[in-house]
Length: 584
Image 1 (cartoon, rainbow, N blue to C red):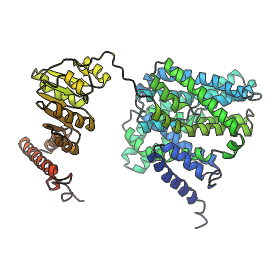
Image 2: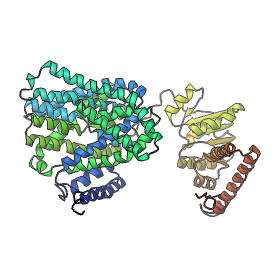
Image 3: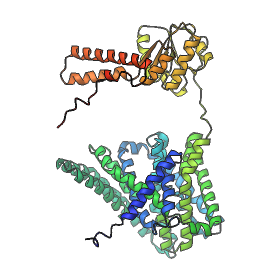
């Protein structure tokens, strides 16, 4: 029995998991991000660190499944209508960037003295950005669903599609490759399009019925197996059709994006995605061949700088050509300036047909890996040293000599509702906010909002705080709200101050500053929702109101105790569920 189980290398598994568990939290804690943590851990335990692993490329090939599953989850977020809306960015922005990068990056190798064919392949490989790194960073920054994130996703999708013609280019440039007929080229294209068509038809007519049938069996593990089958099967099908694994997984996700099983599929695949994507970054770190870098460090350093600078210039220029702001173009440049994992596939194919020799392929792979490792560092530097955003005040007015019964400071989701009773009673109000975009948007809904910082005394005076009977502070940052309360109470003691509070602790802080009235932003809405839940259970409205009044009374008593004690004072006034849990 011991002999039969000896093939399971638990030492390697434990080593990789241990390295990730130690490195990633440390790197995130010091602000370097999880990707750099994985890369560093891989370098330490790899063949050129402690030497605990000897074949990182084998691990890399398995770990590429993490990228595949990541693309599947991204596809689940992309309904076909949303993808169609992105067509201009995919085939306009993406195609232009890829075409310019392939053409101009190929010149780097020529300038460095390499043959034309090998230089073109080297530049083409560097064109393909790392989907894994960029997607991970977009997710960590919360930008995947933002417009600027969607434009980056569009370019990455086009780059995934570009691997097909680039592999065809490798075959054409290979010795004897020009002998391949036009008919052969067209057949390859037709096979790729046919693979996409078959996958689309299967997704439309087979996937939903299959998942409905499996859901009826109520076997959770079968649903998980089916989710993995769809992801990996789609990826394999696309690979057989000459396309990339990631493209197949992405298409499968898109086809299931409007399915009723979408959230279940995402929950099933997510754990595998996270582990395998981390393993991918570990393997990239392991594959960093320090001996090759030591032997050719000057060439690698010059090549990395040349590739990244030239690619950065192209990305920035294309972004600005498509009317991206300077800040967005710069951020996109930093995120996408590296090479990617598909370059390994391209260079391997070139090595196989004789376009590259073993040493050149190793140097190119090292260039790609170094550029990938530099990306998290570049992004950290970008975030730390980028200039402060310039706020455009075009079309907005600063307050000057205003007067009214009420001054409202802050016109976000809270202030917009707070003003309604006042306007319904035809009170004269002045509103200020420091967000020009919000002010312009408010104007389209019939509101006049002045541009001003409520923490400045001159702005408050210009907005009419001296004559206002009430000042409503509805800003969304509790520190700012507290500062304004303190300023208004000190400078305008005749005004009644009403403030939005973030939570109970914030209420206590506001009371210390002398606020006249406070309102926790979720207290009454949450209480009302709980009352509606009681109504669903059949409780009479009179009893619901009586219960709500009792809760309000106990909350006020607890707050009074906390003012003289601490946050834990009055805990006995909270209705807990520890003694009322229903056990089965």
